[in-house]
Amino acid sequence: MRIRFTKMQGAGNDFVVLDETRQRLGLTTAQYRLLADRHFGVGADQILTVRPAPEPGIDFEYVIHNADGAEVEQCGNGARCFVRYVRDQGLTDKDAIRVKTMSSIIEPRLNPDGRVTVDMGAPIFDLPQVPFNASGLTPQRHGSWEKWPLALDEYAQAATIFVAIVSMGNPHAVQLVDDVDTAPVLTQGPLIEHHARFVRRVNAGFMQVVDRSHIRLRVYERGAGETLACGTGACAAVVAGIRLGLLDARVEVQTRGGALTIEWTGGDAPVMMTGPATTVFQGEIELPD
Image 1: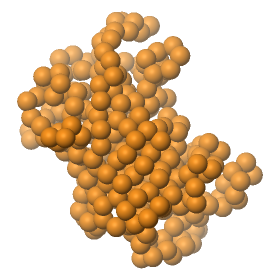
Image 2: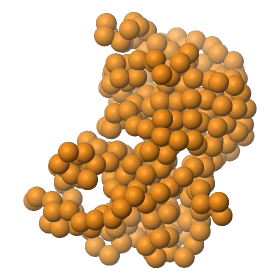
Image 3: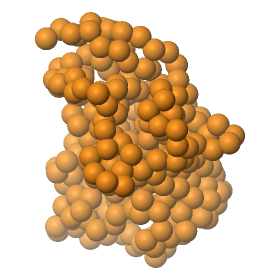
Image 4: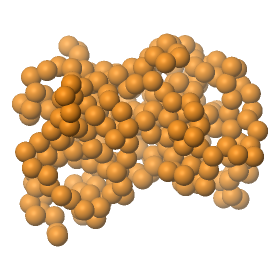
């Protein structure tokens, strides 16, 4: 099978984008993994698929597969690339669209300065909806919120860590660290991702608060490992920081791949994310059956 693709990136979080608006490609888990493979395929953190509107009032369906081939609920940096792609490919003439993901409806919008803003919807704090199993645990109060203990094994450099837990349509565990450069992302990340209390695994965020309007962030993503940026991870980190009393309502997030602006006024208000979306190249690849 020979397919066309577009390679895109948002703050270094990179994607292979596929157009299924005319016909389903019917890719297998192994074929998604091959597309994401940086040695034998195109190379990407996630594979993004554009499908036709599934219902009235929606412009497109947005399907996301991680580098391990698993379909996931949400990808914020990918959402910015999604609206850039459908506009550049002539699939819409709108600057703002409504898109259905596995978990929610999001609204990405092209801005005059070339950046893209995405209404990511309201964060979810109800632990069973994240989902997170808190049975038998006692949270640690911090500000007006709480952090939850996670017991890790002897390879994690800390027997127990404390994380703030939130969903942005996908699950996140955010840990405060003194310095993201020396944070144990590669050792603790996979242990947190696969922790038994997260029944659908989790994205592990490591947040350094610089001041009330700036953070530095690294994220070990579920099914992809550490990426240069994670849009939903940035949203989750800022929401956690605000609820913990550490951050203001507008925060600049510095990732290893670039800067994102996150805004949240609290409560049931949506989280707004603004950042870059860039096409890298287009091509074709032969996929084995």
